[in-house]
Figure 1 (cartoon, rainbow, N blue to C red):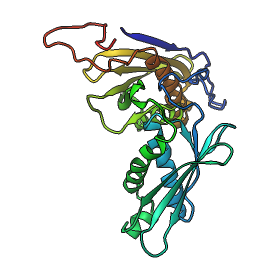
Figure 2 (cartoon, rainbow, N blue to C red; figure 1 turned 180 degrees about the horizontal axis):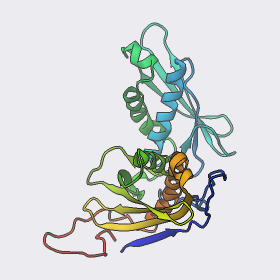
Figure 3 (tube, rainbow, N blue to C red; figure 1 turned 180 degrees about the vertical axis):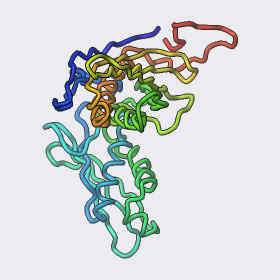
Figure 4 (tube, rainbow, N blue to C red; figure 1 turned 90 degrees about the horizontal axis):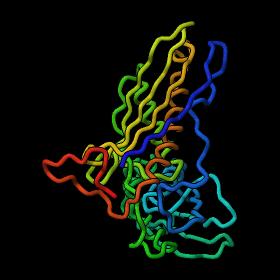
Length: 295
């Protein structure tokens, strides 16, 4: 089956007006993209007694790694039932490690994991080398997630989304749209893949800028979501007129709003699909048409 969403954009701009949030959709009442085993979430604190860049970088990567494990996580906000994850560097001169402590909303310890950092090169550690931070977070996240997840094997995990090509945008607008979509998907709790594979969905877009009367331009963006076999499972269309000066001078902000809005639509679109059977490859020589072989 194939789904389609239309994001209506009704505001016309003049050159003297500020750039409004015209691409923004109303936030969904529920994020259905992930079937989360814990609804409280984990607030991840910066790592204590680590260099400043490392303290923040490792916390950021831990949030991403927990989300990849279908555990809601965040760095800057919490609710009354949120758990708290703190990491502290312990270096008595030998056997240096990070003591990860997960506490409940009342401050009671739920679990602890000691992650060795002995022998880690000083320079990449102090400079928060991205690959190093990702590796540490990816190794620790499963231990943390295990303390709060139940019946993990029964969870239905929605495929990660790889943000692919964006064609037709002016200047470096394609890269800006890609970055905004990734940001929006992560903000909504979706898993974002760094590379495409047979286990990921593929998001792409075509941008069309058309001249209009009164020195205006229509910006139309057609987003498509496809399965790993290239079959389109849904699309999101955006279009709105802008003053030419706005497109020329404020494309970065327009791209940001368009990408964030598309992410909300994409979460809604993908949440409508039953992923219990995962991906099923089409039979050789058989055209499945619009009926994507997943459900």
